[in-house]
Structure formats: structure tokens, C-alpha cells
Image 1: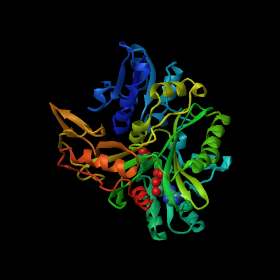
Image 2: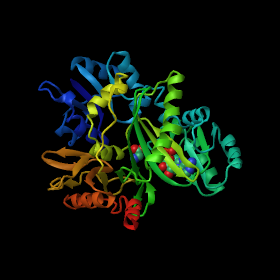
Image 3: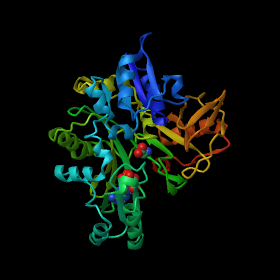
Image 4: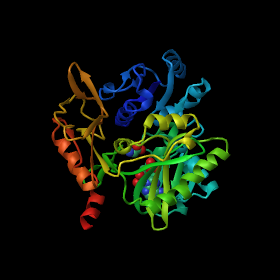
Length: 429
Ligand code: AMP
Ligand code: GLY
């Protein structure tokens, strides 16, 4: 069949690489298209221009090219209802409806759902004015967790150490710092613990656990400095052991999927649960309605099942007929090479030579690259995701940094300690 993948980052390069290995694309006539794609994705797919905000144009392309499955990578088109438009046109799509994507698109929606379904999460208040929000601070203690309700490109969360900082941040949020996303602000109880992520595929009825991961959000070694989209990740996350995964599934993911279905908003696609492992057990921090970036890269490295068949089964409400997802027992670890300046203004146009980085089995996923003639150059903040496998986090980290060191990319930097928490634990045995 023909498949259309939407997106342009490292997540989509990993998806394209894995989809290209699917039996669905094994025939001579089968085509993988990507819109807009990137130079790495172009190794596996035909990259095309398509405005995903123009649902009519996406549908017309799918009809013209007889697309049998659309895979939506990023959250914005999902929250915008592209999956609904495609389904109404009779086109199979991997990704939730607009109603179901509220799990990522509205923090308040998700907190209310957790309350209705008895899902463990931080206590919270939803507020719609500065006055109301400032008064609500009285019922919380420092540090204060403040969240713009809507999508804010990962920047909508402020953890304020003092009441003064909290009030200033609230004034910014209601003052329009995040546009419409900040018209409502959720104030939450601060949770203590280690963070980890749990991924599951679902068609609204069947749930297949897809793997676990941990990422590093801060820009600097030792987890310091400003937040980023993620500077590296590894999978599996050994802190989420089989017992905890069972608990997450039973107490968080199953009641979410069931409540969404019972309330007429069946969730279909990948559900990404951001978790805090507290002394009282795992609690939900937030949901995302797509794969994580760069978590997807490590999940795809380990995936042994056929990604295309799993995604098509989600789209067709047929996940119940699929066997459990097969994953390598090895650990995958990815290091993000970012352009100097990131997460502020990244330097654009820096030349990249990948050299022999992939010679030892590593994969270099393109996140923010473009071609200028024959030359590969940086075109974004996070530019490359250098990904490798090993028997544990220590070995996977070593292999990933060997690949990083084989790349000539003078205008970039990366963290040198991805996986440090787990590597410390491995050293202690
Ligand atoms: P979110 O975008 O909701 O994942 O929040 C971004 C980051 O803020 C999370 O990865 C956590 O590190 C932190 N965070 C969010 N909510 C809380 C909370 N209730 N308690 C402690 N930390 C939080
Ligand atoms: N790496 C975090 C995210 O994709 O949301």
C-alpha cells in the first residue's frame, strides 16, 4: 500500500526508517511519502510539500495517490482535528481525533478526566483569571506548579520557587505570553520523584504496551540550565520495572482509555504518559497524544514488530488481533546534537559531515537538517539524534558517543552525560 507520514523531525525520521521496513511497503509498487520530511527521511520516503493545516489538500493528495494509511507525527495537526477530517473522508489514519487529542491539548481536560476516573495525579485547580489564580495560590505550598492550559510547544510549564515568582509568572501567562494557550492556567501540587515515560498503542479498546523511556530535558550536563525539547533519551527505563509498568497500566492507562471510550471520545494512536514515580506510587504528570521526540528514536531502535502493521491495526480498530509488541532486550540511547545557541536562537547553516558515524551500527536520525547543494547543513535547534544500542545503558552510551565523535559538526554541542542516573545505578550493581 502507499503510506503518508506527516512531520519533519527526528521522531519522523525514526518512524520513516521503521515504516520503510514494514511488510506493508514490501511491494515494488508500494510508496512511502513524507510531508514535508527532511534529508534523512528522504532516504526512505518521497518528500513532498503539503500544508497540513489545509485538510482538503491532504485529503486530495491521499485520494490522488491512493494512500492506505496516514501517520501523523506531531501534536499540532492532531489537536487541530486532521485525523477527524481524514477519517470522515474514509482514509485510515494513525493518530487520535480532535476530541481525544485534548489529552495533550488541554491540561485542564486531562486533570478533570483523572478526577472522574480516579487516576493518581497531582492535586490541581483550573483558573481563568489572574485574580482567581492568585487567590488559588493560597491553597498550595511552594514550589508552585503553573501550567498554561493549551499547547505551548513544551514551554507552558513554570515551577516557581516563591509566591512572588508565581504571581509574576501568572501575570505573564494571563498577559498573553502563551497566547490562547494561557487563557486558562492550571495550578498543581508539586510532586517529588523521578520522571519516566510509558508508551502504549491503543485503538480505543485494546491496549498494547509499547515500551518505556527516560529523557533529559535540561540543556546542560548534570541536568542544569534551561529546559529544551529533550537533549537525549534511553529505552527501556529500568526504574519502570515490570511491577511498576503493571501498576501504570492498571491504574492510569486502562482507566484513561476506558473513560475516553465510555464518554464517546475513543482514543486511537499512541498514548504517551509522562509519570512521576513518587513514594505513593506512579502518578500522571501529563499525557501526550503522539510519540516523544527524542523518545521515539530509542523506541524505534528497539522495535522488532512490524510498525506499519501495528499502526494500521490501530487505525482499523483491529489491535486486538495483533500479538504483543516485540522489542529488543537491549538498551537504545540517543544523544541530541544541537546547534550552538539552542534552546535560544540556534546558529543556522553550520556544515555537517556524518563521516563513518553509522559504521558500528549506530543510526543518525536527522532532526533539523537541510541540503544546500551537496552539503548537509543545520536548519534547526536540535539537529541530529545519534542513536545506538548496547547490553545496558553504559554500553549504549559508549556506542552513541563513539558515533557522535565520528561526526564533524563544529557549530554544534551535545550533553556528554545522557543516561547518567542509570549509569550510576549500573556501576553500583
Ligand atoms: P509537562 O509539560 O506537564 O510535562 O511539565 C514539564 C515538566 O515540569 C515535567 O517534565 C516535570 O519535570 C515538571 N512538572 C510538571 N508538573 C509537575 C508537578 N505537578 N510536580 C512536579 N514537577 C512537575
Ligand atoms: N521529549 C519530550 C516530548 O516529546 O514531549
